[in-house]
Amino acid sequence: MSDLPKMLSKREIELEELEEAKYVQSLRDDIEKPQEQLNTAKKALTEISEIIDDDIHECNYGCDNHCELNGSLNMYSVENLKSVTESALAAIGGDDD
Image (tube, rainbow, N blue to C red):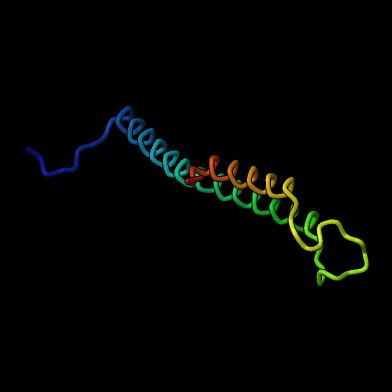
C-alpha cells in the first residue's frame, strides 16, 4: 500500500462539492426561518403600536376635546390587538394560550 494520499476522481470531487452546497443551503434555511419570524413579530408590534396610537387618546382624563375614549381602549381596539397578536404568534410558532 502506498502512503500517498488517494487522488479523488472528478466525480468524487463533484459529489463532495454537492454535499457542501447542500450543507450551506441547510445553514441558510436555518437562518431564514428565524429571520422570517423576526420580521413577522416586528410587523405585528408595528401594527399594535399603530392601533394604540390611533385608538388611545392620550389625555389627563379631563381634556376639553370631548374625546369618546377618555384615555381607554374600546372593544374594537382590543379585538384588533388580540387578532394581530394571535396571528403573529401563530406565524412564528409561539404559544397563544
